[in-house]
Amino acid sequence: MMEPQDRVINDIEVNLRLRRTLALVLAGGRGSRLKALTDWHAKPGIPFAGKFRIIDFTLSNCINSGIRRIGVLTQYKAHSLLQHIQRGWGFLRGEFNEFIELLPAQQRTEGEAWYKGTADAVYQNLDIIREHGPEYVLVLAGDHIYKMDYGKMLAHHLACGADVSVACLEVPLEDARGFGVMAVDDHDNVIRFDEKPANPQHAPGKPDKALASMGIYIFNAQFLYDRLQEEASEPGTEHDFGKNIIPKLIGTHKVIAHPFQDSCVMHEGATEHYWRDVGTIDAYWEANIDLTTVTPSLNLYDTNWPIWTYQAQLPPAKFVFDNDTRRGMAVDSLVSGGCIISGAVVRRSMLFSNVRVNSYSLVEDTVVLPDCDIGRHAKLKKCIVDQGCVIPPGLVVGEDPKLDAKRFDRTDKGVTLITADMLRKLEG
Figure 1: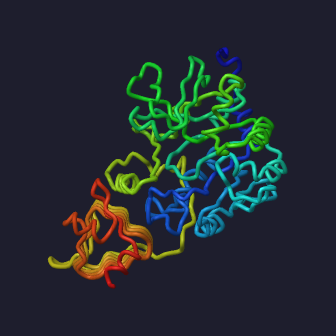
Figure 2: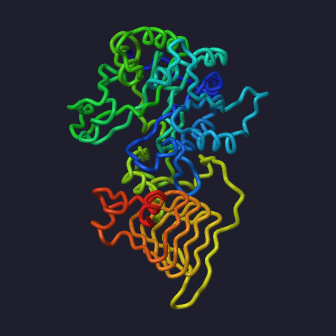
């Protein structure tokens, strides 16, 4: 059993160590549970919150934490993601040893294979990682929504003398089957790690909660290199951090659990340690619609921890016509640049850039992605409208569940996904 923390890490030391840290953002996943939303985009590149992409939250956490050496590992349908990073994240200065480097799957190793798992993705780029000479490697998932100060996690890692630290959060026990689940002792040592267990172990003193891995790891660099090289030569492995690398270290090396609540960035008055996996249609809809409430769980207006992104140069949102039969208005909604609400009503909805909502139409509880056109007299309730859709005049969605399920993709919770392909089939 490890002794309590034996030294205090001050801010100056943390800042110095952050400069010697390389962050690797794993952004190659398809996100198949998002169904047609990821037919042409990797999950980290999916639009979120009106003007951002999902990956912007992880990258912003790095910048705000003081980490300015970042590699983004991509694979599945990465074109729009690569384009977004090139356009919006090119402000770091190479002469100051700052960068966001794109690391697409290149079949760089002898097997000439694509990335076979999270650990293999890092292993295939070991030569590039070594060239940067980091002392610590921060491995991150690029497909979650949260605000986190990675500097606080690094301070915990240093104070404990850990070989690897794993960020964790408490989740309801019934939801823990989809995570890596940890058991810890009184000093945050991980004494057990099970990837997606059928019967998750509850957190100490909390029978209804489990400690779930967030897929965020800090490794001492040389320790990581050694483990990846060992794992790469083993037969029958899935080359995954959660399934292979981390479980093998339990009991033989210092694996520390870092509680998310210790480094979560919260706004004044917040009570929730906000973290969302928006990997299903329902979760994606709920997280976006929550932002339309008076006091959302996620604060996008926090200037102390801003979320950075690429922003197209667009005119302001415009609302036109004001009479009893045709009034352009939006209530309890977020409306992005380039939108025109022309004699239509929008309630409790999220409109991304360049959306046109035409006269006499009604949009309620709906997420509308960029470049959509909603025809006259259309009614959309509790929908997600995919990018580039042209909603025909008079279309009604959200009132007849059976008809919606026949024409579109409707979830058990009543959210209807509409895509351009689905609309074309209606025309045919």
